[in-house]
Length: 207
Image (tube, rainbow, N blue to C red):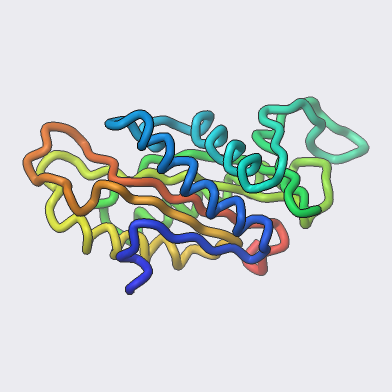
């Protein structure tokens, strides 16, 4: 349970992805340091993908966003776009990304099933890319929200929620939470205390 109480955490099956996830946390911290009361997770898929691209550059790799490519069978391809390409430490990642707001106070098993479904959609989209199988990566950016009146015991509740997410099969995972120890139960709006990135490659045993 200890790691789920940490405000930041990252792990990955391959060193290149692990380095990117480490920097992804720092990029978001820097954004908040400069912007003050704004967070990266206030936004959706396109912005989240951009933060990951910055992390790739700052950790020693290169990145290309929203690039034109062909998808589907090689004998009957269709034109499309790939959300993000990263080259880092001689490793290529062709990434399809999704974003989801998670009602963290919902029933945990049901919420985890919704989340896994969205990650699977990202993996299916990555599968359509015309590149080697071991370079395909589906990513889900996950922002938990706490509705008005359900914002007590954030530290423990977020940890429990994270434990459920961690059990979803993954090739890499990272998170950053900056607000959970200072949230007020009387907030006048939904509260989003942080963000999780969960990634799964097509070579993962569960795929």
